[in-house]
Image (cartoon, rainbow, N blue to C red; front, side, top):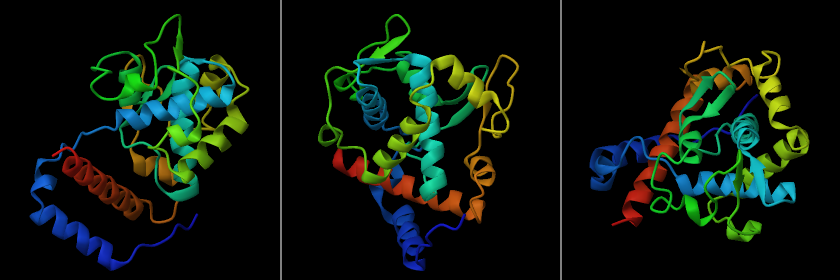
Length: 218
């Protein structure tokens, strides 16, 4: 699949930012937008028509949302590491936030989602698209497509789907552990042209997002 190309000026801008911007040098390379991740799940809950989703189902749909976004636009919705786990592919930081491994109040997660209970994760209220300011129109489009295709499946059907190499060939059996899923491998299996270059472009955009986030916090 051919994706839009970006002008040389963008690369030049990224070089200047990396070289001279103080906020850039302070930016955490492992930063994660927990607020956006929570909004992705809150939107999927809203699509379900209920007030909560099964945790495993929510995690699977988040991964499939990233996959759909890469397929459509060459960029994932969320900036985070993805791993193969025994129940299939997982967005690592989203998974850890769902499990309460971070301060969910401080990162903005609990503004949208309640702590998981009885294998469910619930929204704090009914949200409209306008409430979910971290999600772009492209993000919403991809999540709508994922819900239309997979929203009717339960968690175990989604586990089976993501274990099938015909469906998600980038997943590998981790034998009880976890194995990173490189973004480039996802792109190659999704037939993205010039996958290595596209990964570099994604990383540049994500880096720029982190710079702006750092500037806003100062």
